[in-house]
Image 1 (cartoon, helix red, strand yellow):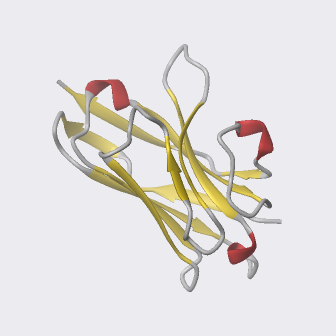
Image 2: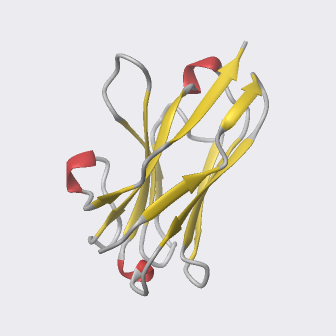
Amino acid sequence: QVQLVESGGGLVQAGGSLRLSCAASGRTFSSYAMGWFRQAPGKEREFVATISRNGGIKDYADSVKGRFTISRDNAKNTVYLQMNSLKPEDTAVYYCAADRSLRGSYYFGDYDYWGQGTQVTVSS
């Protein structure tokens, strides 16, 4: 069992930055690829970024490529999402998730554990 707790969301102006954190419980954090997803009101949950177990492989949605950076610290059982040049369309609840695969997935159904989410609101 893995419990995930996100933090770092908030209200920011367009062009600003936020850093999301996701702290995981348990001793097996490095056994999971990690992903970030987001869901805006009235929309489906969408893939944002994923990182492999050892952090060597990272993938991003086209909509955030070049602006967001995913990273992880296995010693701290934490995965991060650095978000720069934020746009109003980035407004959503952001979720972290854990996947037993080696490198993660774009598909939310492949993930085994989810956090409760953190709200990110970008004003224009």
